[in-house]
Image: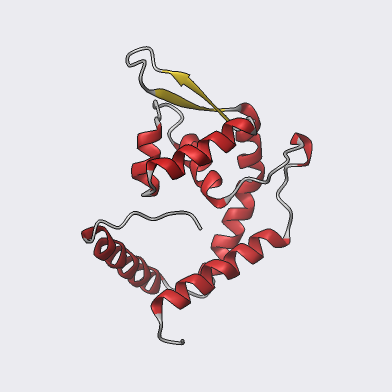
Length: 155
């Protein structure tokens, strides 16, 4: 399994998740029944980075490369947990804008440092050239999959 790309990616993903979960997410003030998932944190991050833009479900489908049903389910859970609200667009009543709640902003900001620490840990000892090579290889792999029109789904 040492030279098996898929096995190595999955193993690395699991290791990162374990490190992340070693310390509980700082959500104690919010009494959440469910901790936000990685996909939810990705959505939170995207909404924060694009806070001056109108964001719709289709935008998230494209950015996350997930199917409509998957994104819809994640957004429903986020809405149920009051992390987001969806409001009808005044220009097109068939679509709904996704609005980040203040509660979600707080959760994300409190845990952003944890993400940065893990990013630093994972990239520790890697040179800029090694990181450039890593991103180049990952981009090529993603392109190979996109060329086959593969859409990722959350496990």
